Length: 217
Ligand SMILES: Nc1ncnc2c1ncn2[C@@H]1O[C@H](COP(=O)(O)OP(=O)(O)O)[C@@H](O)[C@H]1O
Ligand SMILES: [Mg+2]
Image 1 (cartoon, rainbow, N blue to C red):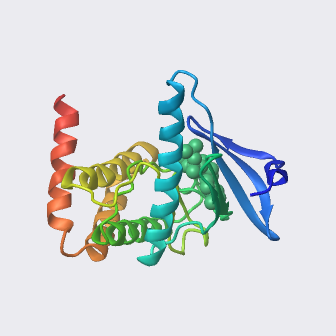
Image 2: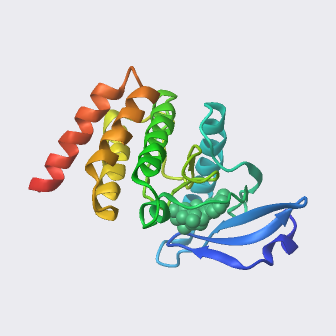
Image 3: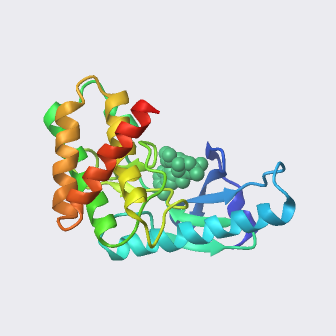
């Protein structure tokens, strides 16, 4: 990975990583670099950044193999904790939920597709691990399928608890970001059951149990 790829405008600076707009072989791309965390011991910090970079690349590729959309991984530099990712267009789930002029049926359709995609991911043995509304993007707008971002906290051998947490987090975001969440939650769960027909019953039950635990904690 050439160092001149580094010089692009910053599009996001999160808790863990910085994303810069770059070009990769002429394609619009994002360089995601995990920054040093000086509060961690140096060796531990180095190892965590490398592992998360590796996990993210691996799960992004594995998810694509299941037919679930994710950005293409163009390049990886483990020593520098960098990934070069396909730059996707389109609103995040958060932005979609906050669009005041989007027809409710179109939003419900988008959320249903999100459920189908997550169901496929789970049925294929992958949990997301950080499924917030900023980590889902709709590259073709509300009428197309979702893409999943930021899989570095995901797992290739998730337990029921991890799957339940993914489901629970989406439900919570729908409820906190939309004034009429009930039809959306229903559409999401319908889609999820379609994407993960064998596992949906157990995962939905676990998500419900997690909600109860959080409420009465
Ligand atoms: N491949 C991509 N295409 C378009 N936007 C992206 C892409 N990857 C990330 N983003 C945008 O940058 C934000 C942060 O990226 P993310 O991978 O979630 O990093 P972080 O670990 O900092 O949350 C996302 O919420 C999204 O808005
Ligand atoms: Mg993120």
